[in-house]
Each structure stands twice: as structure tokens, then as C-alpha cells.
Length: 379
Ligand SMILES: [Zn+2]
Image 1: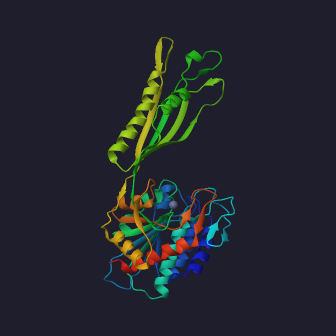
Image 2: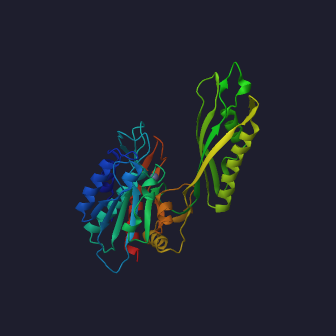
């Protein structure tokens, strides 16, 4: 049913339009034009202003041809990671890759191409469907802030799909909650050669804290990572400041709370150990911390209408689809948090966020067939 060649051509066109996070305007306007040509009403929300980007989330409504069916949401994100400018896609048999100097942008333009091909097929083949709400978000790769700033009151759908993960055949229905942690370590500046005993090294405090910290894979459902560390200005200065940014994730709220508390404690304890006396006054290392919830976990029941529809669609097409848990977070977490039940279906993109990224045309076509059949099944 799906026109694989047309979808591939469209995908190649989309990846040639640069769209780093906050710079999605060109691709958004192209998609607006294409959606309007299909008979959809298109608008942009205020998320672009909220995040300092070029344009907001694209919200399109394709009227249903069968009013007895409930509306359904289909979503993918328009932005890509770096290096993502001047992408020159190369087609080799079933594989589309970049020329090796950039990412491909299959994350997530494969999701967009699949959704657009499904809409085209519905129209061309006059397949009955309910109203379809399409949301192409901005800034997914920039902390999901497009989806976070999405005005959900504009949507009627209660169920839907995000197309933003790798293997076709995977339907991600569970993903973790995530905390972000920011630590500002304050030491005391001193000349490193003349009077180091009058200084407190913020680098030493941070190193000690991090070396005592449980990081990486904590258990089967919990992870933690220090992602950024910055500090110091010269070798002859005892550094008085280090900035550290970290994250923790878990499918279990209790384990997440414990991991986040553990990371905070490592910093506080390390800071307390370092002190100097200057002019009769005791000065101790100090850590300022900022901790916030990045996103809440996603837990979509296998019995929800959207999951049932996808599984039935796959069965009808004789494709294997299984529900899965992932350690990653995506727009689907935010949709679920906002009250729309959304699962995340694989598109056939591989090695994402690297210059070795590639897309399987066969897998993307299969994903499109599944989405098309899901729209037909959904009731
Ligand atoms: Zn993505």
C-alpha cells in the first residue's frame, strides 16, 4: 500500500533541509505547504518564542472521513543533532546514510517521512479514517522543550503514536523518569606556587565527589551520568570554581530519588572535607546545587487502545511488533505526562546521533505500513 519510492524521495528532500534545534523554520514551512496540499489545516504554536527558536511546533489537522472514529495523534520531531548542516544523503541499496561528515537526520525525519506518506496514502486510496492530528515538534534534541511548551489544549486526541526510535518492530511503551542535576563547586582562589595552603581546589572537591559516585548503569532500570564538567583558569591558580552537570534516570521513582540523593551527598561530603584558615577565619568548600525533574516516566498499558491497534495492525500484516522498555526519553514522555497516551514506534533508523547514522528503507516502509494499518484499525 505504501509507496516506498515516494517516501524515500521525500525523506531525501527533508534531510537536505538543515534543521538544527531552534532552527526548524525552513523545514517547518516546507511541511506546512505539503500538509496544506493534502487538505490539512496547519498552525504553529508559541513554543518557538518560549524557547528562543525560529518557529513553534507545527500542529496540523487532517479532517476525518469517518466521524464515528476518534481523533488520533501522529508525531515526530523536526530538529536534528549536530553535526547536521549540509547533509548529503547517499543511497546504497536498502540503506541511506550520510557522506560521513554529518549525521543523516533520520532522527527524526524518518518519522516525519513515514507520517507524511501515511497521510498521502490515506488520501490517494480513499481509506476511511478519523481526524488525524499531526504534531511536528521543535527542539526535541534540546531537552524536549518543544513538546514541553506544546499547548496541549489545541489537541483533541487522547491516543497516538510518536515515531522516534530505531528498530522497526519495537513499540516503546515504557521509559524512565529523569532528573537533572547541576552543581556549582566553590573553593578558594590562591597562588598555586606561593601559597597553595591558602586555597581550596574546586577541581579536587569535584574529582573526589565524582570518584566516589556510583555512575553508569546502576541496575537494570537505573542509570546516571556526569555529562559536563568545566572549571579552572590557569595552572598557577588554585581553582575556586567548577561547574558540573549530570543526570539520573530510573523506571522506579524510589530508585531515582535514591540515586539523585546519593549524587548530591557525594558533592556535599567532598566539599565539607576541604577547608582552610584565612586570617583566623575557617573557610570550607561549598556546593550550590540545582536539581529538577526533566521528564516523568512513560508507562503505557498494553491494553490501551493505541497499543492494541498497533499490535493488531502488525498481526494483520504478519510483522512482528513487541512492546518494550527503553532507557531513553523522548517527546512521548511529555505527551503522556500531559495526558495523551502515546507509544513510540521504531522507524528503521540506526546508529543515531553519530555520523554513521543510516536508515533502512525496508524498515521505514514496514513502519509506514504499520502506521497506516493502525490508523485503519484505530477505533
Ligand atoms: Zn529523535
